[in-house]
Image (cartoon, rainbow, N blue to C red; front, side, top):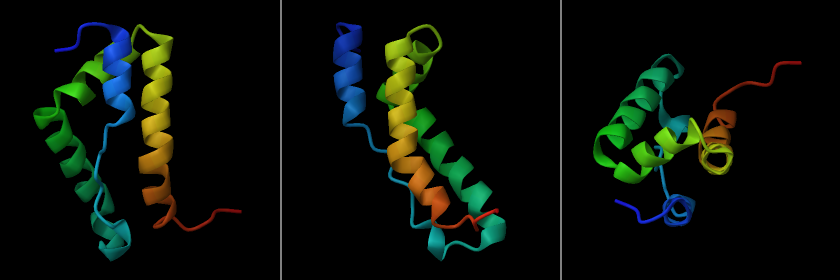
Length: 85
């Protein structure tokens, strides 16, 4: 585990969700692919679980989680989501 919240956040800054290329996924299967990946990360990566738990009570952890999603999840979704005017 992590000695301090700062050590957790430093580890989380390097955290990778490693989403697959969603542009190669049938649009009807995107949600299933994302859920499968998130469950795999949840089950296998203690950093992600610790960060998610810390985000419930720590604004710093919540901000770190938002940065992870903004940097990794949002671009992956943007690549397969048509613009909505």
